[in-house]
Image 1 (cartoon, one colour):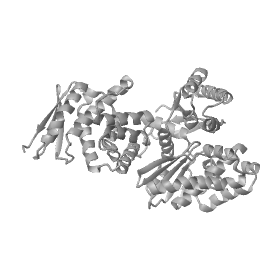
Image 2 (cartoon, one colour; image 1 turned 180 degrees about the horizontal axis):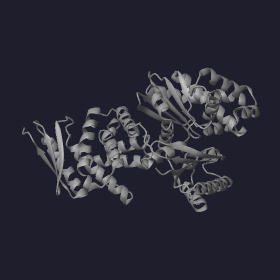
Image 3 (tube, rainbow, N blue to C red; image 1 turned 135 degrees about the vertical axis):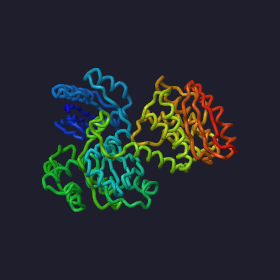
Image 4 (tube, helix red, strand yellow; image 1 turned 90 degrees about the horizontal axis):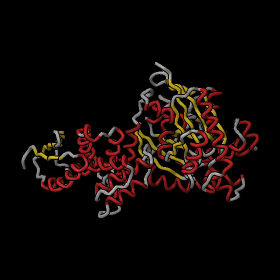
Length: 506
């Protein structure tokens, strides 16, 4: 099999990195080069809302160098991603245009949920080590420059995920603004973390036991990897080893720490912040061990590329994790699991029967599943304005693995399931939302009583009709009454007339 070369670029808050990978056969991904440039974009963004001109010039010079390196490796494909430092700038459109014009590199701004999902995939690229650990109760702690993501796993299944504004650069900016002395820094970081973790525990952790913590960051992970590499020890970090790291950070000078850890001096305060956060979470969750695999966002970008090109296929079902997030959202807002399962089943049946007509793919089928699960989450707030309140809940809650734009598609499908269709968007998005809304409305009408009256439903496409055969001996007068207007919208969208047929008479 031919070898494919791929490049991943991460424009982060503190560093900009380029990694070159080779894919050679199934599940064979090898990093062949890594170039990291120290470039503190986050300090400007978090403090002032914009990246200053000098740093913008430096970023463009760096990316132009990266483009030259990619050409030297004859890279066949690449993906460049910008995270919170770029995402939170007030003039993001201008920044992206300048980068494209001056370097030739197209930079994708990824949402927090996309970034964390890619970080999570980077851990999955570790294969057996990852699968072994998340079989137990595990927390993935992803510490970035702007925020931190806490994701809980149990028996290889994502239980919950939540973002906290506890990023190392954001905390550093706050400490500098407060003119905090170094002797007070650890106490202030601990207080900041504890204030948010107490609320997090009440809402998400409760009495759940956590056995393992997986740390993903750019600060203490390099130390952990070098330590295991030198000593040939296990991949996990013991409490004693971590205490030794904290002792070093507390008692030695910045220069001594930088030499010992083999890092730039300006990175030392960030290592301290990340270490204190990790220690606090470790104690808070009562975990037995911590694993720092030393992966980066670039590894996740490459892993996802390998998946899409069918060159790399892991054993973990990431789509299942996205669905798990939606199910947890539904549970939080008192949604009916039985009702959601019924709608999921009906919508999937209709979607699959209409493949030749709708022209949608697997990703759109996932949007429909999520919309079916969250179809009436807004009832938690209002029994009258269900569409609007559902939309607001979905747009205010991250679903790991979905971009902001994808989450907005789902939110609109749910909104227009309850209200007159008036979506305003691009042509492609308009058609996607219209088609999936039509399917969800039709499915919703078939269980209007919320009693799951049908023991079996079959959908058959016959010329210009979609025949829905239901097996039930119950009275479906209510369903038939709501079916007609839903069928009318469905026919308007697809030019296919739905027909409801009852196998058993009432």
